[in-house]
Image (cartoon, rainbow, N blue to C red; front, side):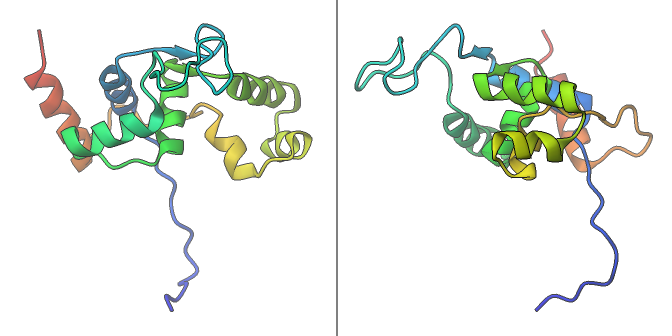
Amino acid sequence: MKENDGRRREKKNPSAEFIDQICSLYDDVYDDREEDSSIGGEDWAPGQKALHTSLVAFQKELEEGYVIKLSTSKIRKILITGGCWTTERSREVCALYEKYGSVAKVAKVLGLSETLVKTYLPYGKVVYDLEEKSGNAKRVERWREKHKN
């Protein structure tokens, strides 16, 4: 069993550049008001693919094509932060968060866990222009240089 040394794990939010990179790789904007491809939805048909890239498909694409491993909830949060993903649930969570200003209150009202509520809210703070770049920031920089027009 791993011992807890009393230190809390530091949360590290992705940089604005990383969010931009993931959004550019997603290369789409999903809004469920424009495309209802959920089962039984207006744009749904058995055996027909949705018009947008699903989070699971995008997760697989990131892992296989770019060696970026992220959970679907992390991908959703990044896409929400970048303005590339909006659903009825994300709009509801954001509206209630604006109203109450508390993740705990939103979770209670919706009957969800606080962790799930957080995944539907955009990042509040991102780290900008650090002098010492992380390995990921260096990869993003190399990727951008390689893909400049």
